[in-house]
Amino acid sequence: MTPKDRIEELLRPLQDTDEAAAELARRFSERAAREGDAEVAWATVDSPVGRTSIASTSAGIVAVGLPNRDLDDFVRELSEAISPRVVEAPARLDVARRELSEYFEGERQGFDLELDWRLVPGGFYRKVLDETARLPFGAVVTYGEIARKAGNARAHRAAGTALGANPLPIVVPCHRIVRAGGDPGNYGGGPKLKRWLLELEGALST
Amino acid sequence: MMTAASPATTTHPPFSAFLSEHRAAVLGFLRSMVGPVDADDCFQETFMAALRAYETLDGKNPRAWVLTIARNKAVDHHRAARRRAVSKGDELPEVPVSDPPAPDGEVWQRVEGLPQRQREAVALRFGADLAYREIGAAMETTAEAARRNVYEGLKKLRNQMKEER
Image (cartoon, rainbow over all chains, first blue to last red; front, side, top):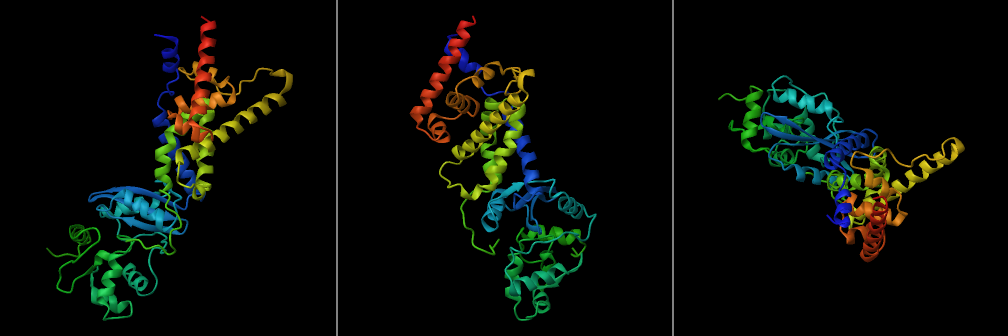
């Protein structure tokens, strides 16, 4: 071996840089979320129906991504809609992650979480989601009924649009709104997941 | 699905993606500059500064940008260590500026003895595993100057090691 080869061999980066960097990055992210330097924290939760993602700001839970949602898209959209100062910080989201897990396991019927509504447009959209948030575990109502509760009985289509754009599914239980004929209807997370959730809540007689 | 309350002002990737992409290069570089123990603190300081200034990143060369921050943190670290050494005065004339070497870190200790520009260039080339063009960007100089600094640094190291044989 020539001296040149030897020295370049010795100058290889120190061992385990990748793993150590990942651990340092985790520590950094939790601190940035805790101390408020990061504006958005996100994490994932494993559930019987797949990986769910969740995000919060200093005001509360701001978004939930159902399993059919691509994680990179979920994070990128948060970044574009709120701030690019987004970090992955599971410890910061500990309570929300635990509550979601308990819900999916059938051990919890409601959520005790602060919500940040900033991704919901105001007006009728917000009214529809406010009314939806009041629906108890196991209850179902039709699109027409939720439109009426939100103040415009004839706006069942607009109610459907508002529910389709719900950034906080599960926590704001838009799966509890069904078609008049008894069919569960559409769902952002897919009709199969809607059926699964309604069965979990005992709201679907099959 | 998500509608912004106010329009997004930047096209920056999420900071979490930026962190994943550059964390290993930053740590490799810092370990080469200040040793494995102090590198951890410098890493935290580097990314905290990067997060706070993230919206000022123009998006052209994020790796060079974050390594420039890391370079400054390493320089601050060396200055602080030297100040500590000086203030302790005569009792401790030979306080090392960096941590004890890692098992395979002997040659890296020699790197720390190189002149500033050469040390940075060698750390960026081998610690952060960058190409000369990227080293030039991180050191705010040309690829050619970066190559020359690496070359001179390696020559010095090689001579030192030859003399000791």
